[in-house]
Image (cartoon, rainbow, N blue to C red; front, top):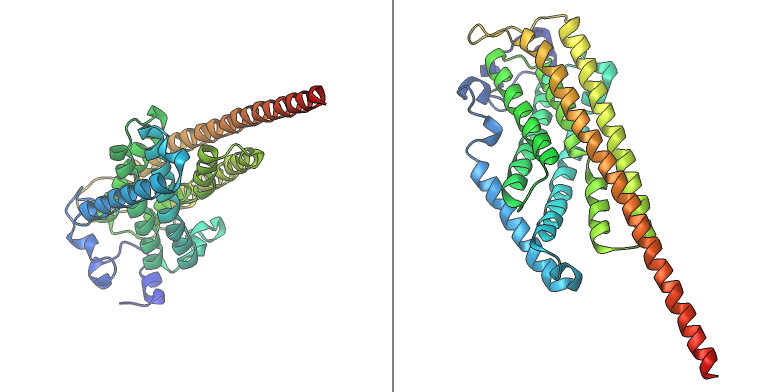
Length: 309
């Protein structure tokens, strides 16, 4: 395994044989044989299904409110919990491994390309498997959410094949990190939705609003990071992205594809943020109605006591 200085010195498409322990798959995987959805796919999807079933049984026994919910709502709740449990370690791992991957000032200057690749692969693998499982597991999925998930999966497939054909670890993993980063920072959203399902407290409204703001910030930052990579890596590159296998012009493709993909993703994500904000308003109205009913009941009880006296 070469050290980071030798990797940095290559400054171009890399020989996959140099990275036998980490990225040998770059030299072995056939085109469109999506590595992060390959031999382990069935096992990972089975693990998600088993986790959802365990959660469903545990919540049914421990919560009468959950037991009375519809099948669709129960599946949504299980998905929320799985998202938090799986994406949180992925987010912490990626930030701890390559914090500079989220720093726009370091784009094109880092020398930890192998670590950057690992972070992008980790996020891509977990996000893609979760999204595939969610689409298969839910009774019904909103068209906007379905479009977002399919777009994200397509991003992963395209970027992986770009790695296969170019063996270029300088720019492509940055696109993966920036485009997939928003998918592993949704923990506040899922926690807020869980509270929304189980509680009518006014705290839930604040949590929903915080989640909407947090999600908006992370998605706008990921969007800006993607365009910073686009500007430095494609519009004013120090080295061009060259196709090692075949003659496809990946650099031209990225110049067209990245703006379209990033804009579509951020629009879908911001629309989801707005929906979350509307849910917070709906919950606030419901909480106010509940409080009004409590006040009416209290007044009625007091009136009854006074009449008895």
